[in-house]
Every structure is written in C-alpha cells, then in structure tokens.
Image (cartoon, rainbow, N blue to C red; front, side, top):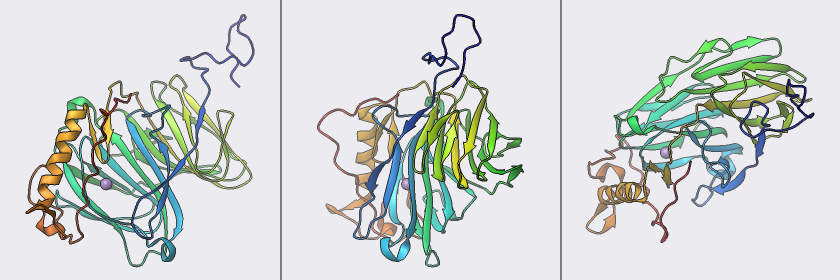
Length: 333
Ligand code: MN
C-alpha cells in the first residue's frame, strides 16, 4: 500500500483521484460469440462500472481453445466505425481480409491494427493449420477529431525487449525502452509482458495515463493488488511506475494504457459513435449494403459498395446487424 508522504496522512488511506488511488480488479464475463460450435470469450471491458481505459473501449480474451471442439474462429464480413481493432494472438493463426483491400495473417506476438475510421468491413477466420486458438481482441475508440478518418491497416512485429526475469513486446506507444512505429490517434500504450516466477518489475509509465493489466496466465500483484488469470486490473492515472510482482507461475499479460479519452461515446454492436442517431445510421447503411430484394445476400462478394466497402476475396455470408434496442443507447465515458 502507498503511504502518503505527509505527516498528517493516515496509513493506507486511499484518496480518490490522487496518486495513491489503488488498482481495481475487473472480473470477466463469459460471452458466446454465436454459431453452432461457438467460441466463448472473456469480456472485461466495457463493464457497468467502467467503459474506457484511455481510449481502449473493448477487451475480449479467449482460449486456449481446442479448435477441434470449438470449430475455431469464423467471423464473416461485418462492419466497424469510429474505432481501431487490435488482434493479438498467443497461439494460432487468423486470416484477416478487409474492404480497404488488406489481406493479412495474424500471428502470435505481432500487431495487426485495423483502423475503421468512417467505415470498414472485415472477416477473421482461423487457418486450417490452427489447432489451438488463444489471444485477445481489443478495440480503441478514435477521438472526435479522427473518428471519420480513412480506413487503414498496419502490421508490426515488435522485437522483444528484455531484462532479468522479464520480456516485453511493445506494440503501441512507448514502454520499457521500446517505441512502436505505429502511430496512434490518442496517447496510448499496448504491450505484452512475460514475467518469470517471482520477478518484481517496476514499469515506468506516463502518469497522465491510466492502465489496465489483462492477465493471461499466472498470478501477479499489480501495485500490491492481486490479479488472477482472466482479470483486468485497472490502475488510475497519477502513477509514474507500476510495480508488478509475479507469483509462483510464469506470468503473461497485456498492459494497455492511455490518456483518459475525455469524450462520451456510444457503442452498439461493432460501431462506435457519439449518439444513438450515429449508430442507427451506421446500422441502416450496413443493412442496405447486404440486402438485395429484401433478403440478406449469402455471399459477401454480392455485398453492394457503400460506407463499409466490400471485403475482397471473401465468400462467407455477411453478418446482419442486430436490431436496435427500444430505449436510446446510453453514452459511455
Ligand atoms: Mn471485427
């Protein structure tokens, strides 16, 4: 626990919003992705109590899954707006295709960052060689000034940086002496961390950033707060370092951070907007593109061009948007 360096400060007092605010453990909920032998993911963001960590607005963690049982990943063409997707794998391989013409193989330890901007559609299918699928699907909300930017895609395979008992792959921003060459639209950091059992690592961080440590395996104390596999440990702004202490097992985790976005967003299905009307319009535009003579087309090559483009080389049936709820979608911040 942090002892405030002040004679009147009581021991172990937590002061909201100050440098001594303690980490908060966010536990996952299991969400089936749909389909006959569907994958189930562990979702830690958004939650009722917290929608954003920096601009990170969505954290799904999955596996290790035996593809023979789950059928692997087969996500047909679907649209996005106002966000970036980060696909990060620990095991397996996923084939990515998008409507901006990018075709990429997503592999462990490599960043694949898709910028939706004003609109993109894409598909993600695990390859035939994949027997175990294990990774995370992360979203970053684009700030107001850039949310209608051009769609795009970036790949980066970070060289690991290492010290005694630890190794890091920095895929966005700067951490532990490495900087990703991939630009971001708001100040962000993202890195995979590996810790040997018993390792204590002080990670210097930007005190204007808040952070979340997604624990993939092992147990780790985050500034004294225990985090278990599957949990996301939120560390508020105001700290210039985050002390990690690995338990008796090797630890693998993702450290995600950024400057608080400071904007209210509206999330629905695969869309990020700023209002109910925004996402209703995105939904209508997607439905229009995938519908012919009142029916959803059964081959993505027959999708009409529009805001979300057409995924080149994909023949899976596009995924229709769910209905909007009766109530207005609420703003998250
Ligand atoms: Mn997607």
